[in-house]
Image (cartoon, rainbow, N blue to C red; front, side):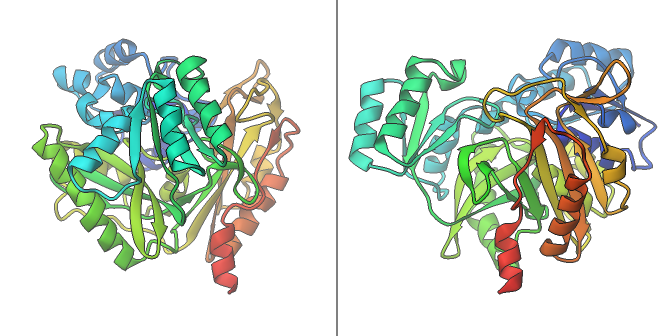
Length: 427
């Protein structure tokens, strides 16, 4: 089977790494790919958002299956356009992808279908938004309605911070069209978890759990990012919790989307807050998380590709996936300055030495090859150093040992990925 993966980040490297091992694959392409993905697939210089370019490439190269990694081409309707020309793909339709494309849509959907989530309101008017903030006090959460590359969520500790976030989005246009409307919602306490299901329009198949670390600094401090690290499994997501999440959040979502004429196919990623054994939905994403995808793929024992095809074909019922028992933990190394302005073009050395251990895999995100073949940083989040271990503490130790073997003065990382789970293990 000739397969094309769309995207060029760490998530797509993990997907290519997993798919490349499938005996079903005869040729694997990735558009646009990166320096790490080039080890597993042939990279083609087509941007993930270039829907027409991807369609032409798929037709010209007799692609039989397309795995769409990022949210932007999904929201732009890539899956629909591939279906129109008879090419199967993994990912939701544009109508279903609105679940991530508009936070307001997602919140209204939850209200219509009694899915537990934070109380909220939607605003385009600055005075009305600030009046809502004043009435509800802080901490409070301000979100850009549209796609903002994981940076459109402001957890405001004070009313002043919340008002400033409203001004940035609605007046200054910090997030462009994505911030033309804001969703303001109550702050939820508890512990976050990432919950993933494969969907075929009818059936939702739970995957392994994970926990992401969104804040840029140790101890979950500083601004939100696209993710500075993750580990799987997440101890808070017990078997009983899986049943609760499926019953109260996932199954009503699947039924509701079907009833509204938008049956959901692809992967559905529920960002959850869990407190007192009660999960609430923070947000839905319509693609694998990054860096959660990296730890999920490290733990996946089964062939990924048949599961993705089963999702597209609507035959996930009775499908099963097997997982390794070990913990996987990934540490994201980002360019200095991220999530603000950051430098590009710095050289990363020592990657081969860092990945000598068979339980270490380095997934690339924002990288490319320089003129002399060296790996250079081109993005904010650049590489994800991923380790397996019998415990979270063991995986954490291995991951940071590999991080310390990398020679990259232009980058940094958090030094406490997995800290909650390590504390549980030690208590």
